[in-house]
Image (cartoon, rainbow, N blue to C red):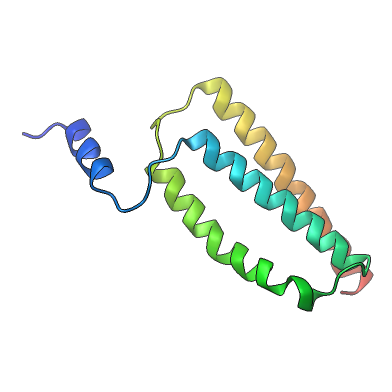
Amino acid sequence: MADPDDYNQFNRKNSKFPSLRKKVIVRIYIAVIWLTTALILLTITRLASYEDLKYFFLTVSVLNPLLFFLYVKGAPQQPSKEEERRAIFVLAFSSTCLIVTFFAAILIGH
């Protein structure tokens, strides 16, 4: 019977997508969240209009599934517990800030 590790190595070598480290992908995801938050704040304060930023928001909607796919295919398969906890905390904090920004935009009336 074939070893599952051999199968995973075969798939990684023949994949059309690059195998990035999961740590790098999480950092990109966090940067995208903070950039989205900043652009929403710029829109709320009327320093930039939605028409100026709409292509970024469309790109984010395509980038999120791509980042998820790259994370699943990424190496190493299992990060250390400390790295995993730190990444979960930073992602949760960033997502909370993004959600607060969404509600602020709704309450202000945009």
